[in-house]
Amino acid sequence: MRNYVDLHIHSRFAQATSKDLGIETLSKWAKIKGLNVLGTGDFTHPKWFEEITRLTTEDENGILQSKSGMKFIWQTEISFIYTQGGKGRRVHLVILAPNKEVVMQINETMLKRGRLDYDGRPIFGISCIEIVDMMMNISKDIEIIPAHAWTPWFSIFGSSSGFNSLKECFQEKEKYIHSIETGMSSDPAMNWRLSQLDNITLTSNSDLHSYWPWRMGRECNVMDLKEITYDGIIDCIRTRTNFIETLETDPGYGKYHYDGHRDCKTSFSPDESKKINNICPVCKKKLTIGVLNRVEELADRPEGFVPKNAVPFRNILPLSDVLAAANGWPVASKKTWVLYNELIRTFGNEFSTMLDIDENTLAKILDEKTLKAVMLNRQGKIKVKPGYDGAYGIPVIDEIDLVEKKINGAQRGLDEF
Image 1: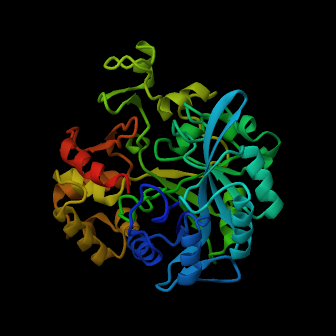
Image 2: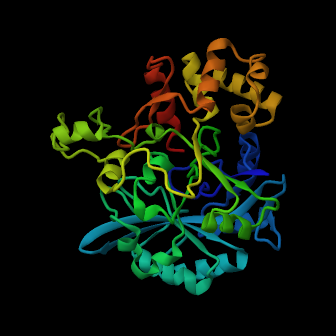
């Protein structure tokens, strides 16, 4: 049975998130998206922890269920800012926990090292080596996943503050790391170029800051779970058994795929950046080096290499973005919502609409151009003008850069959520 699992989200208690992010709002929109399991997000925050425990029930398998029936597992993200190897490091880690008791032990342990009440994604000045040791002393069932592994500023491989290998980051604790999160600006094919990641499972999650369907589940994991349990999900991650695939946005859709400066409106491919010595021609400062360039730097294999036992993936853009781009509408416009809602009412959820419903059935609702865009999306063939330095990529239909200003304008109002 296909289960859509998004293991990295946030609550309204994290910075730059929607104030409407609550358990039932998350539950409602997860079902509209077609997700089966969500991370709770932010379990280290005391107010969110209280809300989770008050508004969900936990079964013996470590699965939380909201009143409306949505399933969650305990999850948080923590930021670690420290110095190692003579360089400042900034790494975000996703932490999954098997039950409330373990979560309480994690929170108690972290409180000894700092505050938890000021942000859903708290900051600690301890190393990744130390945090793994702390977590494993609590429970070997805790799963630690480097978040958005390639983004420049806060990730394990980030061009500005990261490491060149898992071993360099975690040293003797590397054995406890089974997975990394690809992040929106990379996909598995890019990660397959690094032989050091052959035994590491590539997971994909939304890292949502709002409940909108173009945020929630925009990347997720597809697992064959006959029964949804914490152990079953962790086994999928650690062994890849019953891990069907990941759904990924085109890496160009991510905010850090290319190099560039958002304020200067300049973006470059790695080859183009090399020609200008990574210096912005507008402000004459160093470019923000994006994910594609960083992967090229660390890769020891050519493009197209596929390792044995690799989990398959599909590049799929959110349905709202496809409907908007095909018609020249802003993604959050009334016209986009009307068409989106009609599809959801008819076919049940977004994943079903995007992946399962046959073309002739979709044609009863969609006009020819929109239908073509949806089918191209299903095949992973929609081109994207790459994002850079915090600016999302732009879907391109029929080689025409459609209403870039409108789409960018809509995203500027929403992408922080």
